[in-house]
Amino acid sequence: MGEVIVENVKRKVGAIEGIKEAKVKLVWDPPWTPARISEDAMGKMAK
Image 1 (cartoon, rainbow, N blue to C red):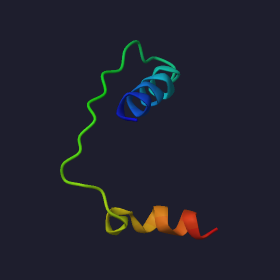
Image 2 (spheres, rainbow, N blue to C red):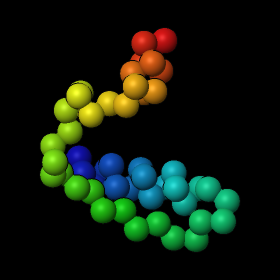
Image 3 (cartoon, rainbow, N blue to C red):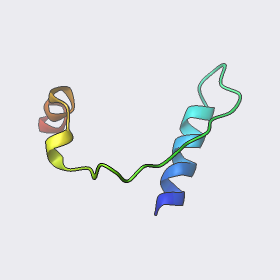
Image 4 (tube, one colour):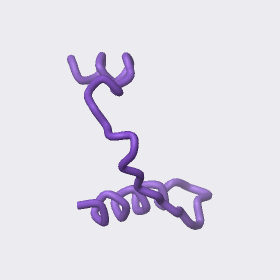
């Protein structure tokens, strides 16, 4: 699934005007947990 994530990010970032190339490094450490969600993102998820 990591390759899919990287390619999706490259495609989205590459679609931004003025971006010629995007290099994406997927990092698995530290592991993501729901505690890492920002307050802003939590508010958007609640809607």
